[in-house]
Image 1 (cartoon, rainbow, N blue to C red):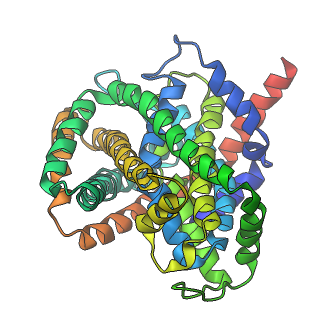
Image 2 (image 1 turned 45 degrees about the vertical axis):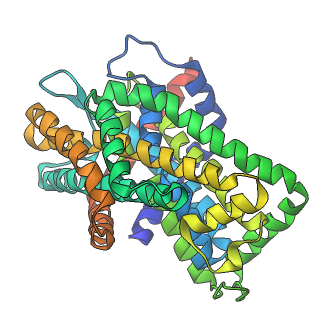
Length: 428
């Protein structure tokens, strides 16, 4: 899966002539400028990006980075950066195709994503892949983006403040229900306010730590780069790591943090008010840039700078240790980040699952799915989730396969659409 995910990103990056990397400043200007409100769609381009980021920016940005470093050494962060650079092309292509091949349901709401660009962009013999994606996508969220997230929040609140897990689950159920039952427009509004706030607050705390230890930053970056190409020796509680371990865990955590290639984010971007697929694709690729190259980098640098990574701990505990050792009350920054990141993941992924159900059963499936999603939230706080994690990871991989096949087959179309757009822009 990792070879296929990363390989698709490399293929698309080469085919696009590195456009996603070269056009980052242009994409930022496009996002800041906004778009005309009379274009077709349900939510603003900015709202689409925030909805996608609400689902993407999650516990992986805190616990996932720490796990990669704990298992692969500091060099894992370097390979996360490389994964993000190629993943930008994947996310761009997904959004271009999502806008190009989206449809309206019976109630006039826009639906798009891998199931639609498979159905409308590929030959009939491939259409079963769209059905497969929708089935796996509608089920996967209940694991990785619902019960697993509520379990993470309940555990951290119980450990820090002794809050009973079921109480956390019931409160989360009410909060998630208040947003999810309002549909994509309410999700976009909440995400547009909450995602920038939580990302900025977390980044500010990380930047304070980095600023206080600015003299250690060059050495930390050197350690990250060197460890990416040479084995990391055992030290403290750290068992040591080969170059392959750094590559493997860095790529794995990078891909599953920014979700490039998974096929989830284009479902949100298909709802954007825009008539131009390339412009929305450029905005979409910023999601990977923000998630991995900014937020994950902040977490990784704090862990390496504070030199807590050889301790033998992993996951959120390692990140908590890093923040608390360098900043008074730093552990509360991690706790707050985990809670907010998990909450936004739950509301963002609910829309993904909902659109998959609409593809399979039509608009009549929306309300039953939303109710099932909300009712499942507290279950994550009381169930043993080892099996749920395994099932969710498997379903995520099964989601990615139809999407990656479609991206490889439709890659030439993406290249042509992109070339025509920039050629016409040059002529204007």
